[in-house]
Length: 68
Image (cartoon, rainbow, N blue to C red; front, top):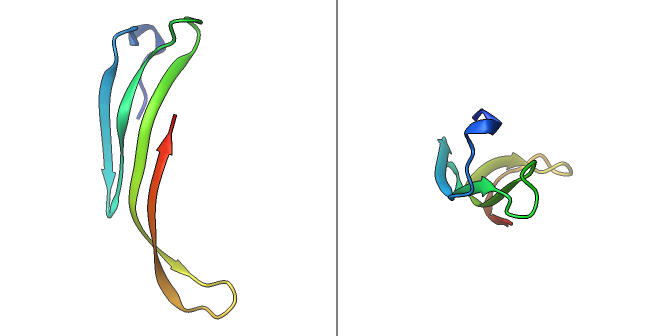
């Protein structure tokens, strides 16, 4: 997702991206302390299908990560 920096305001805007079993959502706004920065509060959650490096067995890795 690309957003022109000059269009970002100090009022929080919500966003949501969904791809397969993954969801990334939250809000962003221009920083109150520095107008050249954007603050993002977001969460990434879902499942990733992975392979074990040691035994090559498949497993599902559940994610629930908070980005502040």
